[in-house]
Amino acid sequence: MSKLSSTKRVIEILKSLNDGKILNIESAAIQYETSERSIYRDIDIIKDVFGDFIHKVEGGIKATTKILLEDVLMGKNLSSLSTLLNIAHSSGMNLDLKKEDLSLIKKNQKIYSFSSKPLEDIQDKLIIKKLEKAILFRQKLEINYNDSNQIKQLSLRPYKILFLNENFYLLSAYTPVKKEGEYSMMMRISSIREIVVMKDTFYIDPMFEKFVNQVQTPFAHYFGKKEEYKEIFYVGKRVAKHFKVKSYLPSQKIIKENEDGSLEIEYTVNQPQELVELAIKWMPMVRLNKDTKLFEIVKKTLESKMKAIL
Image 1 (cartoon, rainbow, N blue to C red):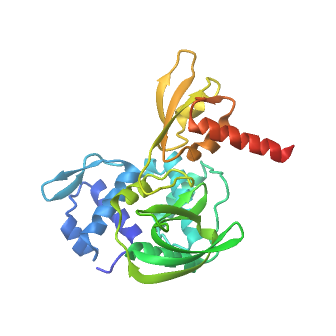
Image 2: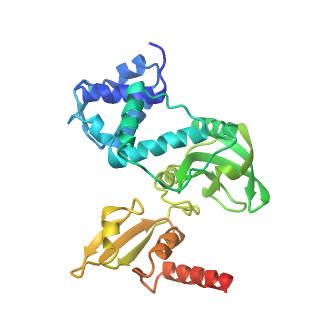
Image 3: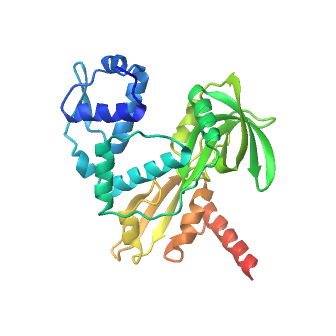
């Protein structure tokens, strides 16, 4: 059998599980001419999208329940798929979907319409290809980066391309002069001017990789170790319904519903700066504890904005 694209492979594996067949990892790796690790990665992708609906049985993996694929491609999941298609187009990727998949998308788009901020368009597709190669093979990079109209030359260890707030970011690690350990560098890919992929490779830092996989905003940073910051938002009853039906960050957790309809919501982030934008957006319907770092940062940010317009 000719080697399929990873997208087609995931779809075929999902269909096989949905049909009640047992997936043998070793056999699947041979069938699709890839590694067992890649098959496990495919399984993880399926779990991320459809939930953990599979379990281990003798001889491999089997679906616990049957997924109604047409129903899954409605509402929120259709929005995610539409965004994925836009990302693929913007970054020069080809998802190579089957005709029936595209037909289903078009049919549902007659019912749903999704409007958001415009997706960032990556003009230099070669930069994306170089980044993909470097991340895949763990190769170090030399990058020229336009930071506030100043070109910086950086030596980095690339971990992942992130899509946050409709923009593409490269999240990398580096070690500052006279310091030890991994520090994070988040940069807009559209501001990268030149990339040189080095022959030197690097080892993955497990703690840094865990941080990478938990990033929620472009303001997350890693300072030699993984840090955690918790903050309580006191949400007024007039806007409580919005927080009930939508998580503004993956870590959002309603910890108390008061009798008057107000909410107490906890966010767990890497540093307080990650919550500034959200707090300002919902003021004055959302209050903060005055004795926290976040309150002081929000206060200074608002004061600075007021001085700029007066």
